[in-house]
Image 1 (cartoon, one colour):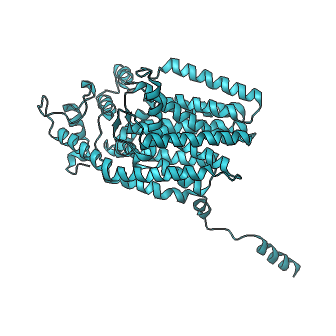
Image 2 (image 1 turned 180 degrees about the horizontal axis):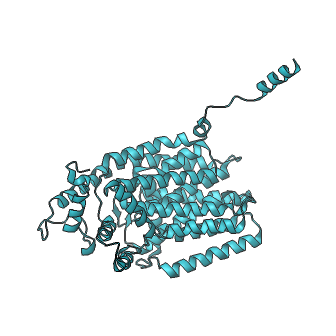
Length: 450
């Protein structure tokens, strides 16, 4: 009898277990679904299967690799020459390896690369939730920033998956190095994992360099033993210098106008939300630059509040993201005469970092900077998504269809004008490329056009 009473009492004190998986959804992941669905819908409506422009670098390299005799030692050596380790400004060694696998499985359908881009964005959300908070509200706002068709080129141009990979690895590297403040992880183990992820980022594009800068900013404000902090910063600095010397990222320094550079960065910040044309060549005071200025102002107020409350260490990770994104935007501005819509994905982590800083500092205070930041972000993101669905998506799809018609009607020495920017001959449409896609039964030549 006593045992029965004890059992009944125990059952009353133990809460009923929730159905499997429900706690994960209630923890916030479900809040990311609307923005993710909108992005997938946008890609479904306006993307095509046809590889485009810069992706032809990869396509021609793949064709050349297919022509090799893998029983010949001489052709093995030729493979190293063909492999596009650094075909232009950026190292693309890792993305090309992934491209080969995905393209072989999909018959060179570039929508596989778009799917990879979306997967990297999901990984970004997971990293933010693992380090900062699993709050449903924070997840919702971050998902609106990350899964936003305002950055339409990310979801229409498959080649941009290389930048998405680089950004993802850089953010994961910063998140890994955040564990230097945890007693559960050894110092050297954490350093090795963090730097390995940064190396993967650098082997995918230039984002890894700025990831190291973000990591340095994060470590500098973390509450860890002074000796460990100094060692970590010295190792990060040494890694940055060594990788820079070995791989030589782009540093053309075309622009030396600080006023233009400042508005370039502000326009990029606002463009993450409000969208932008395919390429912007002027950076006046407008809704994008004003939104960027408001976000920077909110970030400065947040830093001031965190300093006064002695809580700067609590925003170490999002602070690193802000440094990562802002330095990335500034570097692009120095090296490019224009701001491409595809460049905005470098800046999106900074917008996420600004909101996360405001969210962390606003907890347990009456000054709710995070609510103001959320209003700015949500209004801009909704308007940017609307512009993408109604204007940019249909316009870019029409542009791609003109390229598809050119490819379908291509003949050597054809007088028909090229509907795309001039390409180096070795990376342009030619009979070899057209014949290869036909033999692979690419969707374009199957009659559906994608």
